[in-house]
Amino acid sequence: MILADEPVAALDPTAAEQVMALLRSLAHDEGLGVATVLHQPALARRHADRLVGLHGGRVAFDGTPAEVDAEEVDALYAPERAAA
Image (cartoon, rainbow, N blue to C red):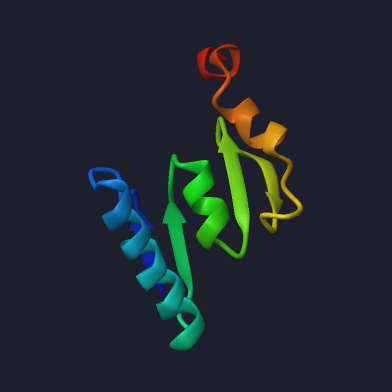
């Protein structure tokens, strides 16, 4: 199991894609579980098999990238929600 907390936070977009592709490869090719915390929804959609959004310690959504609506993701970053 790999736990990666913001593994691409300080990387440029190309390096971030490479790191995420490596993590995805390890998950699929080596059969490893990978849990990653990201604040880049587009990057998560491209590389994740499952998206789980958390707000205030509660699950806001949980599903495949195709199942999770973009509005659900955007709501996590809404100013009024961030202040709550």
